[in-house]
Length: 462
Image 1 (spheres, rainbow, N blue to C red):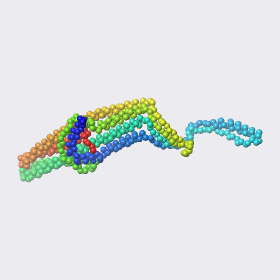
Image 2: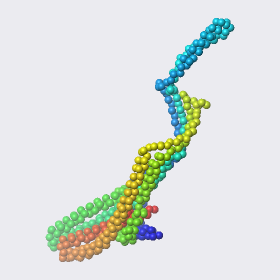
Image 3: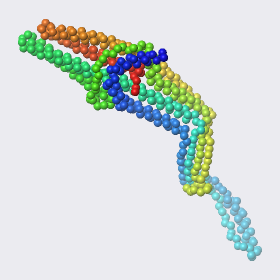
Image 4: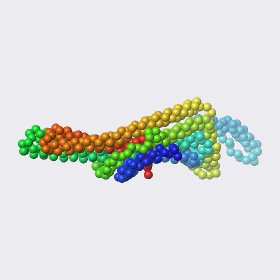
């Protein structure tokens, strides 16, 4: 129960943010999670890893194949069969006996003369030969196949986690881009208000000049101020369009598609301590889960390399036909079943491979320890950035109130001719700057809150 306190406190804090971010920002986040091209590419990588896992599982099943060979051979080694040397003396004696018998006994039957035969030269390679086999193979014991399947499973899970990591990063990017666009639009509105003020000042200056109450240089100064604000407004409009385009890019939409904004609010500080935030991040960040899968895969790699010391046992059954030509008869077809064992008794490379796999695992463990420090530092920075952003909101709000009061009094004095243009311009510039700082502070706080949410991995996916 005690371990769940930080998570409860964190959820309480972010529920405050959710009250303002529920709509329409949540809808935009949902769109980004479904449409973002980079996220889709991450999903394809995960599907590829699943296919590799299916391939590893398929190696446990029997494999049926047909293997056929038809050969035509000429020449090559041969061996001699001395049939003539063995049989010709016998045939000569038989011919002599038959000849004498026919001369001595008139009724002796006529026997054809036995011919002389030559020795035979037989090639080792038959002139034509074929073998067609239907082969069934199945592994019985193979440590490499077993460990490979487990490695692929861990790598597939790690790839799935990488999709979750990108999803969480995408949520943060969408939120930051959304608030940047909102700030850019508000910046345009502030400068439009400022432009209206300086244009009104220009009209006032021209009216005073026509009534010979101010000199022409006052009109020129007011006109120059209008030009300066118009330049700032043009730059702000450009920034607003760029911010909108980037936000729509994350959602895989047209760059100029309209974005619905919600009212800006200043949120309370997080009801969570720094240590609780660090503990929360170390428990919930997907990066650690991903490294755990990598460590499990590397441990299996060690076992796989050790498995080279063990034998491999397979079953094999062959049925086919052999002969000098394709024909089916009692003498042509055959069947052969085998139990095949392969056992490498000595191979020095096996020990080296095991050592390499162990070192790779140690490197990953080192990366995990380094990641813990990096995540801790990221949480610290995000926490203090959020605190500083909250303080800037308070200071900026006070600055805006003071600047508005000062400008209201200065404008009244300027209209009454009790203040000069320089004083009016300074008051107006101070008000515009204060409003811009306040806008930046409010939206920067929300962006910092999104970064703190990312650092602690507290965004809840549906």
